[in-house]
Image (cartoon, rainbow, N blue to C red):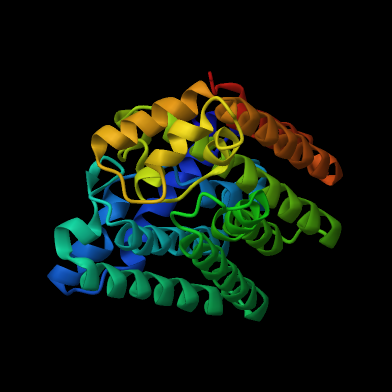
Length: 324
């Protein structure tokens, strides 16, 4: 999935290129070691989806972004990067974006403190953008933490409910997508009804994006993901495809014997195979389509026809290419 191409908005690709040096400079301290840590995942690249949504909401791809709009894009990406630093410690991950994870290269303590540093830099940028942006980002960080705690609390529990799953992804993923759109719309000076519409769009797109990611964790290869496939299964994070498979009387008995503990590679691959054979991936894609549809409904209030079309196309792209 190429988010910039899916949006189809002129100038956005060039505007994203302007974000990169600002990202680097925002976390560069002059301390060689700390700079190596804080720029590690920035240098590894990434989709830059949150800055993309922020800039799209602000400019509709019709003009160059202002300095404040670029800073808003940097602030949301720093929160996302910090969450990756922390998540990889929790998951004991060794690979992220096809490179060695920060915790694997520098150790858990350094990864945690560096993630905190990225959050501090994001907060400083947000404060410079005004109290509304600062408060919004702080509230979003609280929702991210709530979602992550919910997920950790239910780790290795085959009794995890769908309600618990949806609550967790609404916090840990969708909240920052919604905020990315909202910050862009606020700084871009849009009317309140459009700001609210874009916020709803970002929330629904965030849900669809996580559902997509959870399907890919079952059906994709390591290279496609930039991290080991089946990592959630191995770490006891039972997502919607897995929960659906556990309701399948033909799959559940064997799958249940594998789950509830950490999995080595043979057991992880077996569990992935069982979930892939079930209706779990298919039904998860269908739920993703429903969220994509809700996202498209939300943008009916957006005045820019190009942005409206781009947002609709992007929502569709999240689920249309999942061949399961």
